[in-house]
Image (cartoon, rainbow, N blue to C red; front, top):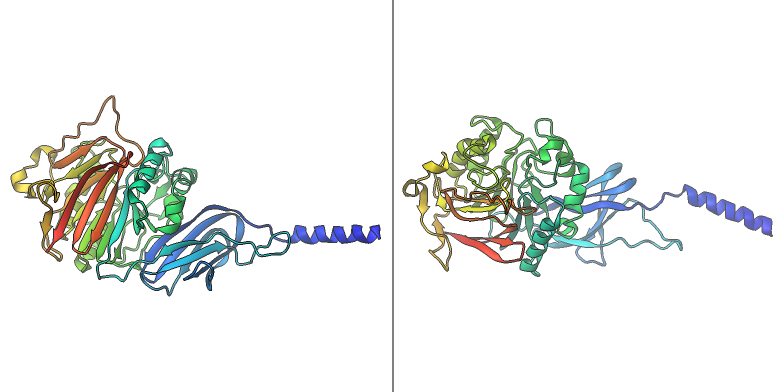
Length: 438
């Protein structure tokens, strides 16, 4: 009897040792490349296995599934055939169903997202904008928590990162600590659209489309999310409702006025019919913060070579980081020189601070109106601000408001009105303005 028990136990242990162990999710899940009818879900596990996503319209009924071919520890699965503006619940894991010691299926966590609304018609949209967030320190956490306090129960429809997403070198370990371990909830519920910064560029190459930044993110190269195909993840565009977003690579792609990125930008802006155009990239066109746009090459290139294209294409807001401050311009157009050359009589399209409770909101005609005015916003303090002992000058003549403070930007677009708010690390509303279109 004991011999049979020993044999049975040995057989059980042998079979158990041959069964694949349940994997652990080390990163994610996180959402990428969102369109009204599709969503890319990514995650990382500690061992290779199949890539499988179960999803559905109810948390208790994940009736649909999607897979990726092969086995991997880096999982990328696209969900297709979705309905626009619809909440989906989902769970990620291997293609097999893991079981507990009693043979019962293990329940994986269930998360949810809402697909973008149909492209074209207006839909109330909230965008969270983070510049230079990835310091891994108390400042980054304070800015994150301040936004959540300000946001309350309101959904974040999408979020943008303006570069320097993970200090100091944009390595995989940097991204793990500065992105995936800081924003897990937002990553799995709202699609993230990033730009490349100089610190991210330490571990990435835009020409070869290689390195950590390009390994981590799934970005449109063929116009899958709206706009003209760029053929590269370094710069791209996408649509959300009645908004057209354009991401440029101010760090590592050629910035010549007649180069590939500039030619693509002209074609992309000419093709869009959205009500709003929002451009975002890392190096600011105007700044007298921790960086000086009068002297630094990449900043000069973006102002002289790309700002004219953006303004001719009808851009409404330009969002940048790099300078670890908050600076917001007047409603301007046509200034491509140094700060000292800024002339309000020539370059301010509409005077005032753009506030309904101040000098009045900025106004533009509806449609793709060339050189009708734009606001440039430097928001590079989502992780750290400039030195307090040797504060930056903050005296660029194009700026309406400048702060040497930690914080992030909240962008709300509803129909033909755009509101931008700067929230500091104490959840205080420090700057705001609006643009309305007729």
